[in-house]
Image (cartoon, rainbow, N blue to C red; front, top):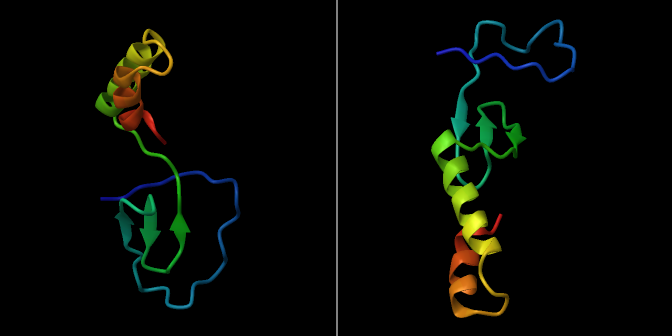
Length: 79
């Protein structure tokens, strides 16, 4: 699988080992970690996760501030 993303930076002319590949790992603590040791912390959200967040935030907006139900709904909404 190959992933290409534009980050606005120029590519280096030569690598230390041109025949080597770079592995990418999508994790929990850090969003993306490469085998070079570079860490990229970016939020990734699937369409289903996005819809769940919208539902929770909508439910949260309709609840009374200070209520126990609002506190319970607020827990999964934390970033």
